Image (cartoon, rainbow, N blue to C red; front, side):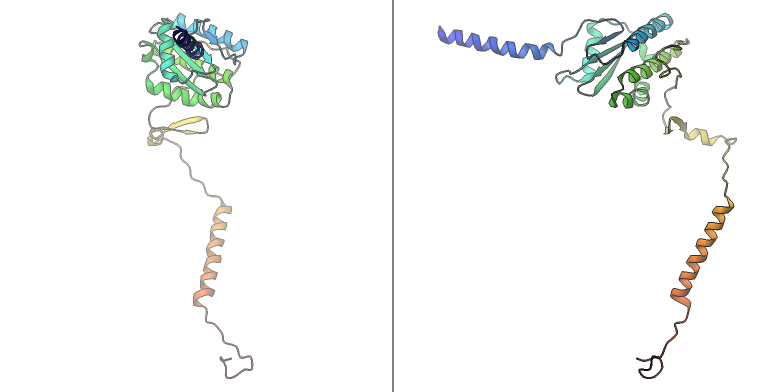
Length: 248
């Protein structure tokens, strides 16, 4: 009997230790457009995401959600985001952004209808160009502002609509930048494609300054003198009084 009681006590202790860890990766209740469990977003950012999500819904019937957490207890961010999307019964037009602060991970869960405006390639491009650097530098408000505006406008364009983002997020996400096409390259903050250089009217001007030309001629002259003295100029022999000329 005592042995049975001991076994039960051990099992209860193990359960007490395991359950909190499991609860950490369970799905929280939605707090609206933003569920900031990690408490890393400013109040005005939360309000602006809610306004943007409402405008998106009016244009496309979709909604945009942001969730922040500190840790996932080893769960993959993409798997958790998709499971949370399903647990909240979000619609096919909706998009959910997950930010895992303590693990520096993030993921998007996109409804099947929303993928018309947010293909896998578009998601990757937008995350790389409008989210990743902000997030890794711990500028979480800027990361949410920049990405959410881009996603909202991409979804609206797919429906032939536009989203007004003026007055939201300060100036962080006012201008919309389309996702770069495949085969494009980035120079500074601008994208260009090789197709840009195939246009016969592309203004490519190559200009040489007189200073550059003068410098090049001087360089050739110096090299010519070096080669001359090293290989072609006849060496003179000198007699220092120690024997016949040319011998020491």
